[in-house]
Structures are given as C-alpha cells and as structure tokens.
Image (tube, rainbow, N blue to C red):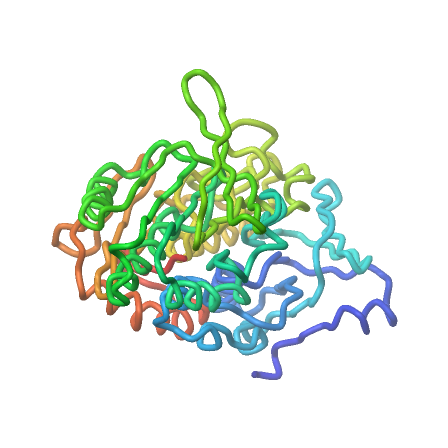
Length: 429
C-alpha cells in the first residue's frame, strides 16, 4: 500500500503517547461506508486531514456470505486486508471506540485514547446481538443451528444444508432492523433448491418464521416473493419472533404476537438458520448522538436527506448505523457517500447543504440458484429501477451481477472512491 497511509497501532500508541490527538475529519468505522466516504473525500480534496478509526485488520465483503451459505462462494474469497483499502492520505487509527463526547468534539477509545475532531462521520455499521436469543451463542455452528451473519459461521450453513436428510428446516427473521431486509429469505430459497437437488425436499418441511407482519416491506416485491413461497410450498408464519434455542431437544421457542397478546410456541427443527437481532453499536446507543425515542431509537440521529446530525451540525452519519428509514445495504451507502461528501465540504466552506439523499437502496433477492429479483427502491417504498424492464421478475442476468459483477465493483470501484452515475450498485447482504 502507498506510504501515504499512516496506520497507528493502538497498543504502541498507548504506551508512548497518552495525549490527545487532533484531526480535521474523523471517520468512525472502516467498513463499506467509512472507507467509501473517506476515499471520496480525499479524491475531492487531498489536503483534508482524515483519520479512520477501525480496529479490524480484515475487510469483509459481507453480501457474499449468502452465497457462502449456499455453497456458491468460499468464505476466504470474501475477505481482504484492511490496509489495502485505507485511502491514500488517510491516517488509520487501529482502536475500538468506547464513548462519544460531541460536546467536546472528542472520540474516546477503549484503549483510553482521546481523538479530537473538527468534523465527525459515524459509519460504524450494525451490531449483531447474538446474546438476545437465549441459547444461541452456545448452539450456533453445530447440530443444525446456522447463520450467515458472521464470517466464521457462514460456511457451516452450507455444511448443514448439504448434509440435510429431511425434517423441519426453519428460517427466521427478528423484530429488529437487519442488514438487507431480503437476506433472510435468500438463504431459505437457496436451501429449498438444494434440498430438491439432493432429493430430500419431499420429506422436508421448510418454514419462514418472521417477526414482521409481511414477507417484505415493498408491496410490489412482496407479491413476487409470495409467489416464490407458493411455488416452493414453503410455510410462512408471521409475527413469530425467535427468543430461545434449546439445542438439547432441537427446539426453537418463539413469541407469537396476536390481537389478544403474546403467546409462546415451540417448533422442532432439524435445521434452523437464525437471523439474529441487530442494533446500533452500544457506544452509539449510549451517546448524545442517538435518537432518544421512537421507531429509530438508538440509531444516529440524522436528517434523512442531508445526513447531517439533527443536533450537532459538525456530525454526519451514513450506512447501517444511521437512523434512515430505508433498508440497510451497501448499495444504500453508495448513494449516501456522495451526499455526505458534498454536504461536509459545503459545511467546511460555509455554504448551504444542497445535496439530498432520496433513500435509494438495492437488495438483490436470490430466489434460487440462477435467479435474482433486483429490488431497488427509495423512501416511502417508491420503486427506483435502473433498467427499463419489470424489476419484480426473477432474472438470470441479475444472478450473474450478484455473483460476479457486484463483488468486482465493490472491491475495485466503490472502496476506491469511484463515483457512479445512475442508481445501480446492488450490493447487500
């Protein structure tokens, strides 16, 4: 990597320097959102003093974990060294954030470092709350309990699917926001195809147990996905929220919401793919920068158009941690990053924040091997198709984009700060 990149190791830094450090722009998070926005800022103005706070030394292409779980990708093909994607000119601070102090323009790390900023961009991603499902942490990765929501667990999903001999295969969706609203469906559709190829589908029951009241948030795409469910003869149970895994008896315990209240039911499984609850990182939830109450409580409190914080004007946020009423995908990040770049530079130059984000997101919903519905939509679930074709149809060409095109674009264009014209970048979980 270029010598312009200045990684700072947390342990050595703490040993030699406990004083505050100051940067013009501090980006919290070195994932898709943090790297993309930092790269675009430096392409626009190389003189900016930008620091990226990110403790991990590996960068993951998480959208491919569905394909890892479906036996199409190898997990090792979804990971690269973080150092190779830190933008030239940025300072890499390898710390973990513990506390945000926006009143004093300071980020405090778990290592005790105080990092001061003139402008802050929050892009720490989403937190996986495995612990909120009783018994899950102990059961995951063995005896048919699987999940694509971690690099170390996704390969076991494929092991569980290819070794499935029949019985109950359960796929869950929690009551919280998740990375890409279509992702829990994708692995279920792939598993159903795999069971048919393995000739065990006739002795199997496939169930989708979702805490939501609909299969997908956008009506036009929901209709297509319900047709797929009917074609595949999958049972759908709404308002079923997984709360416990009893691994010794292979039992899943759900809270079921009805008009008369909440009841508890038990469902036996031979295979269960769990989509765990998710939330904003704890240091976001505990800070003054989080939404205090309502549907977006705990997420970074930003204007949904300008992505500027609603209370602290020198703070911006994008990606999964922001309180934006749209699906949390990397495709959304691709549209959010130029808005943050434009508006942050406008703020630095005392100009009006004129750029607006329209809520665009994209979820390539894999409905089987060789079939993808490219769900592109914006705020208020308005359809935003890139191509002049019916976006609700399953298409092989979209499968090729999902499998080959989007990973290439992610690693070679998006993380390099390359701007895109048009809407399309269907990268999601």
